[in-house]
Length: 85
Image (cartoon, rainbow, N blue to C red; front, top):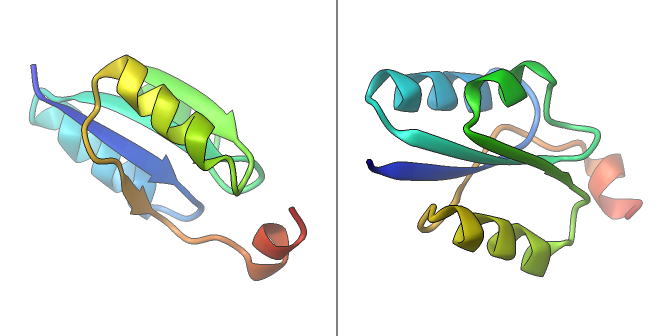
């Protein structure tokens, strides 16, 4: 089964990408940005974690463990949220 890794920010784009990937029969691994990713996204994911901005190694470790190659960033992030961490 093919898989996709999403680094998920806010708004609807992460939900749309995850839903389409599921529709195409793909496994979906989501690393949601804490304070940005919505809770509905977890229901669409085969694996899900919340990470703080800047936890790059933890993000890539999560995707590597789940077999999701080359994660893509979807959704936005608030400037204040990113710069305060």
